[in-house]
Amino acid sequence: MAKRLVSILLIGILACSLLLLSACKDDSGSSDTSGGGATDSVDATLVKGYFFYQGEQVANLPCFYKFKENGDYYGRFFNGGVKDAGKWRVIEKDMEYSSSAGADNDWYTVEDNEKATAKKVVEVTSYKDGAVIEIPYDNNNLCDTQLGGMAAHITLAHKPDYDYVEKDEEEALAVKTLYANNEGGSTLTLYHNKTFADYIDAGIEGAWELNENTYTLKTEDSKTYTLTVDGREASYKKGDATIALKSYISNGDISFTFESADAKILLECKDDYTCKLTVNGAEIDSGEYDVNMSNKTFKINLSKADEITSVLVPEDEDEERGTPARIVFKLDGVDYTLNCWLAL
Image (cartoon, rainbow, N blue to C red; front, top):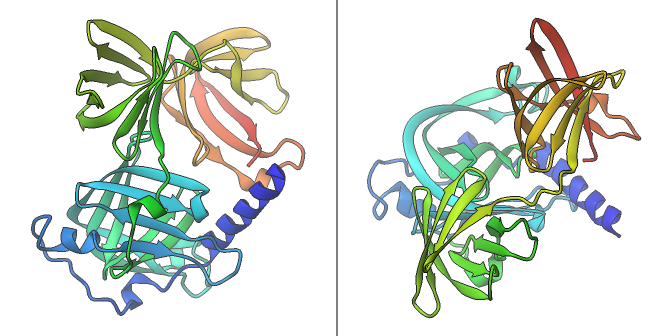
């Protein structure tokens, strides 16, 4: 059943990425790109209804962004297969985008795509991982963007008259989960709707606010706690106690392995986000890594090399091993090409 559900989702995502709603510059909607504040211009326009995309085929799955008056957004893509939430703002700047697929009707051959220029962009910053995306905003549409790290060149049309009811459209989305004492059941979880659940000692619930990297947590019985986040670690001041938290549980296991074609060169990435590079079993470098599983991208920082970013190579997909996430880098004058095989 799980494989069937995944297959349905992937079919929908593929269809979404191949079929684009009408190009932004051809939309008949009224363009509101005047400057101003959050109540009388483009910001006020954005918060009405929502921005929606769904292709014409049955397999296409609905996708939307909802921008809220308090500066938050909620994104639900591929009928809920991918969800996101965070902060949004409008920036006045020019941004070129593809407005049609060009003569070959292929959005992915970008060089022949017809181009247009938006005078404003909507910047979204995810609560989940801090990722920042700039989306061209033109003719009251979100233009030529990527959804959920997968479907690309998508235009979401504004539906200002849509009656958006938050409790019906949204599911509580955990945007940050932190663990105490390296225990899976000892968690502090923050949700996109500004609520939290603390199961470190006993069940405590309440609401949170964010100021830069510090969260203020107010419980239902009016107590106030503070949470300061620094990368994957956090300090949770709870009454007289200060609790050290981490964003992961580590059992010392290897989570991902990049390897050379002959498997003699390995980059092993452990569940504590450290990694080591070995040649014939001998360690030659070490460092840390990050992975964004929504778009299957790794960023690797070894002590002797520049930052390395992986690239998916679908054309080299292997029926048994999967699709390679590939890294190419130079270390001590030697060129390395390693693959981590992922089941997409």
